[in-house]
Length: 150
Figure 1 (cartoon, rainbow, N blue to C red):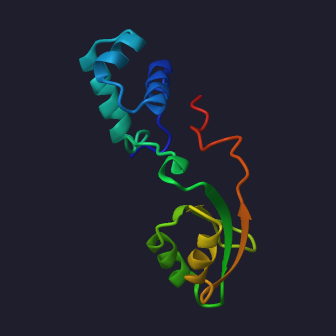
Figure 2 (figure 1 turned 180 degrees about the horizontal axis):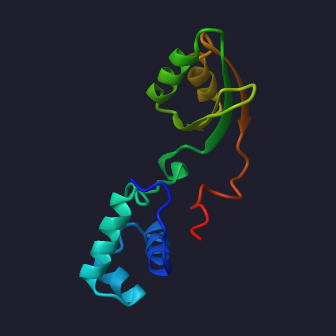
């Protein structure tokens, strides 16, 4: 995998178009970038092989599934419990995202909840192994997005 793949303007446009709609067909992409579908397919294959495109994903709105609340949980494992916490977080379905970070806390995680009453049950599964600090999400002014492509 190339450590620093160079993206030309067409590659950047393809990545942007697929980010907006991962179901866009090669024919539609070709029309939008002014290329033939086989040429677009070759470029996409190259972007996949180089690791620029890792997968084609689906975005789900948690609220549409009844998860009306989200929380950010800062997690600080107790001494000797780092590996246990690192294994436990992915095993709890309410955790939908987690970053291992530097600083006083070791993990920042996002939790989805149908009600505030579910929060204790989620946190109870890790408090034996870690201290937590939780903040409810009021809004998300900036969702996770592409890094600058230039």
